[in-house]
Length: 126
Image (tube, rainbow, N blue to C red; front, side, top):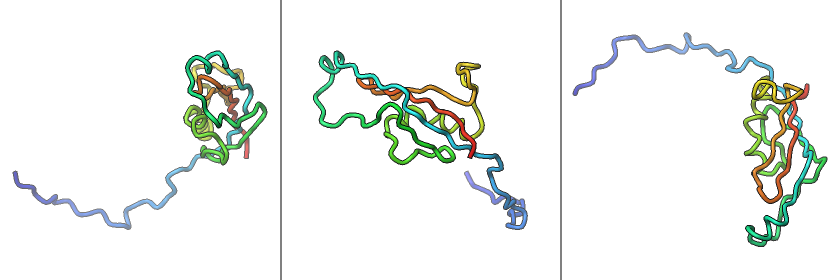
């Protein structure tokens, strides 16, 4: 099969738009550790002994700037909440059609089955 060159003229730089790609307002999102569980019975049965466990305490909080992972946030916890934080930062919310009393928030837990932490995630004004 032979390829033919397109007969259309190439697009010149003068025809490209240089306007910013994102015109919407980005919000900050506050993340607060509300509750931390500790399932010692499950740890005894299923978990190998580990030296370092979760450093998060109830009441700890962070602010995500424009949907970015806050400094000091646990990687595993961030992966559990990232989508919700990004959605709130972009002005979206009302997850699952009215799940939360405050539609600009979500309650998300990290995926540690032995020591889960529940986080309140809420959009805040800059």
